Image (cartoon, rainbow, N blue to C red):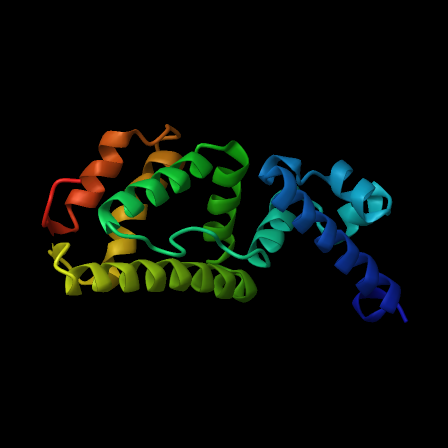
Length: 190
C-alpha cells in the first residue's frame, strides 16, 4: 500500500493531528509549528510537511477538533456575560496565528468542501449558542431584541472579524460595547 491508504501514513497523520491539538490546548495557536508538532508526535519534520505543507491548514484542522469554549455556558446577566465572551474572542483575533487561521479557513472554504463544512459547523455553533442565550435573556426581560437572535452572531462577531482581518487592528472595548448595544434595548445598564 502507498499513499493515503497506507496504515503507517494514516497513523502518522493521526499522531501529528493529536500533537497539534495538544499543543493548541496547552499553549495556544502559536505553538502549532512544524517543528513543535513533529517533536511532540515523535516524527520527523518532513513527515509533518508531507501531510501539511503549511502550518495554517494543520492549525485549522486541529482547531476543528477542539471543543469551542466561546459563547458556551451563558450566565446572567447576559449583557455582562456577552461582554466577557466578546472580549475573549477579540483577544484571540488579536493573535497573528488566529487571524491567519480564520482568514485561511474563510478563504479555503470558498473552494474546498471539507473546509466549507468546518466553516459552517463553526458558524452554526456560535450562532446557536448566542441565539439561545439571547432568546433566554429576552424571555427573562433582560433585552428587547432589535433583530432576530440568529443574526446576533453576525452583528457582534462580524465587526471584530473585520477589525482584525481587514484593518489588522485590535478590537477596542468601545466597538464591543457598540455591538452589544446594537442588539436591542437592554432592561438595565450593566
